[in-house]
Amino acid sequence: MFYHTVGAARLVNVTVDDQDLRIQYAPEEKHWMSLVGQDCDNGCNTSPDPAQVFNHTWHDATYNFKGSGMSAPQTFAFQFNGSALFVYGIQLSSFEMDLLFFMDSKPAGNYTFPGDSSSTTYTYDTSFYANPSLQPGEHFFLLQNGQGDGGEVSHILFDYLVYTVEVDDDAHGGVNTSMPGLSSTSTATISSPHTLTISQTPKATLTSPPGAAASGDLVKVLPVAISVTVLLAVITLFLWLLRRKHATAETVPNTHPRTRISMLPLEASQPLSVGSISPEVPHRAFTQFTEFGEPVYQYLTVS
Image 1 (cartoon, rainbow, N blue to C red):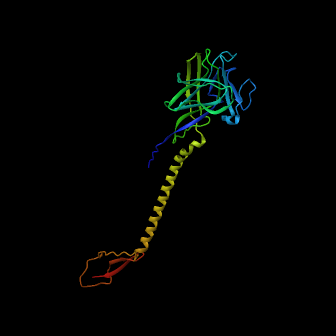
Image 2 (image 1 turned 90 degrees about the vertical axis):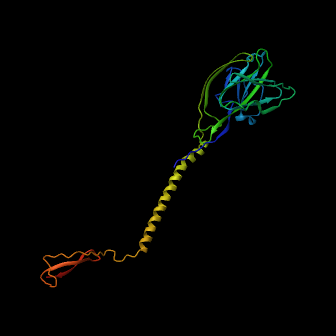
Image 3 (image 1 turned 45 degrees about the vertical axis):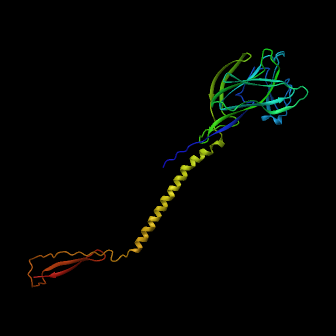
C-alpha cells in the first residue's frame, strides 16, 4: 500500500535585526554608529528607550552636506529570497529624514519627514519602506540616507526589517524566523544622486529549525502505525482460524477412526472341490483390520 502526501505552502515573516551581519553598511567608518542599549559615547545625538527597540539595538547615521565627515550619503544593503519586504526604524520628531530606496537596482520610492525642532518625541516601529507584492525569488534591497550633492539634512535610526518567504509545510527543511541561513556577497556604490551601481553574487541556503519538523515526524510515525495495525490483523485472523478448527473437530463424531475393512479374494493353495471340506488345507479369506490396524484372518479349509 502506497501513500502520497500533498504539501501545503504557507507564508512566513522573517525578522532581521539591525545587527545581523547580512546587512551591509556603507561607508564602513565614521558614518554608521551601531548602538546597543544606551551606549552612546561616540557623538550620537539621540537616546531612544532601549526597552522599546527590537533586541535593544539600532543603527544611527546622519547625512549633512555641510558637515565634516557627513557629506556622503549612508547606505545599507540586504539580499533576501522572498515575496515582500518591510523596513522599520525610530522616528525622532525634531530631526528631518530623507530616504531613498532601490529594489533590484531600480528606484523603489522614498521616505521624507520634515522634522519639528519644537518637540523631541520618539516614534518606535515606524514603517520606512513597505513592499508586500514582490515577485517571489531573489532580491537585492538598498536604502540610502540623504540625497547627496547638497541635499537636505537627513537623520536615520534604523531598527530592523522583515521579509516574507513561502515555506512548504511538508518539507523537512524550514525557515528559522529569527536568524535564517541566508548568505550573500553584495556591494553597492553610489557615484551621484539617484545613480546606483550594484555588484552581487547571490547565494541562499535555508536552514531547518527544530520546531518545523512536526509534519516530518508525522510522516515517520505513519508507516510504523500502519505496520503495527497489519500485524495485529494477521494475529487476530490466525487465532480465529485456530479456534474455528478446534470447534469443528469437537462437533464431528469420531466413530471407529482407525477401523478399516477389506474384502480380499480367497487364496487357494490347491484346486478346490466343491462340496467337500478338508481340515488339512487352510485358506485365508474375509480379512479385516482391528481398530489398531492389525489384520484379523478367518481361515477356511476346503477339499
